[in-house]
Image (tube, rainbow, N blue to C red; front, side):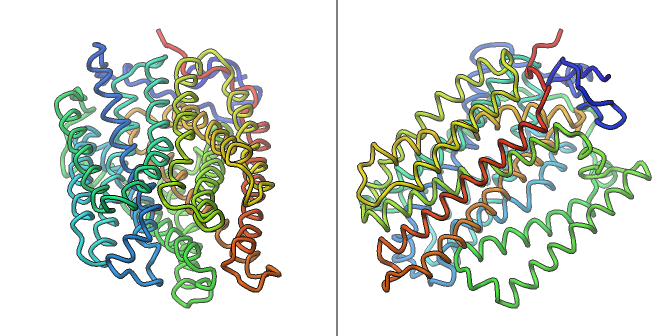
Length: 519
């Protein structure tokens, strides 16, 4: 029997260590690199900067989702690239995360985080100043790379600043809450601005807030002592560049395919889409063979194959992929439902999302305070079961049903599962990687969640579009025809959340309590 003395649990796993390797311990304090934030003011500043900057990226995504019709009209964005202002951000971010995380572990997470914050302010402002569709898409793509600098670095900073225990748990919970809450608030602000001052104001506001958070981060984030001085030799020898490039290329191509499918299901027949999908699939076994070779030779491997033999680590990665796929897709589908089926204005639609961030705040506060007191497997299973109610309510609602009967409870119940999983999975994933690669650990989590979002939205778009085309209604853009497609997509979201429950019941059994304070 293997006793696991890590961040994640101090209970015994029921599987032999030879079959189920324990989660690797990575306490920064053991290596003398813990730059603990001791004062309450410093702790608050760290929470505000990390949560705020990562939340701003989600806020922008929510704003663009609602403001896109007005942006398309002002900049004359063609139907062929209508969704690219939204999808290019996720695409460039998703394929940059792994490499950004690996570099951050060498040059320093604080440096990468501040650089990402600065670039995000610059490119967000540039989006507001864009004069045509090409400029807007280009700056959104660059902003996606900028946030890829921030997300894995933020995870690494949390593990460096806070020792194992309640404050680290609260930091991950705050960071987790910032993203879905930011998206919901972005939907609200975007709707108001689209019908009022204009979409450009949204980018100006986001850039200004992000700049304030950058200043706070620059002055308040403690400097973290590095394990060794940064040098070009370390950049060359300590990073698995071929592995990172192979994986990033595969993820980028897959993200492109899913973005294309979200815009138009028929694009799957396009030669470019087929070529990208084929190459992406071929690169997956190439990557597996490469990192296997690296690990066998004792060289740096970007994500070692052996880590996937850890049942708990693999389970939370699958859970994150599925949970984010369902939660993001359901929220996006509701935006279309309010505007295309119920014919509400952008402002009216966006205001209906207000209860979602409130529920997110409550969930994350509870998880931050209580995750070390309860068994993590049951926390995930219970909250995912609650979130499974959301797609059921959405799938049975009618176009004229009152908002408070189905839509309101569905939006409130949608996020508890993914919010809880954010805290749990970050504590587990960061413990599975050694201290010197904590930014890479954050990159793994964020890559899995971003790809999950892209896959979930693309599959739901395919399902909804297919069912709508088969509708008996002669007018395929009529509310009744669209609702048929949305109902089918909502049932698919239920299938995803149900799968998450099954995976968690098996893979997270006996995990015990996580986030326990270490002496």
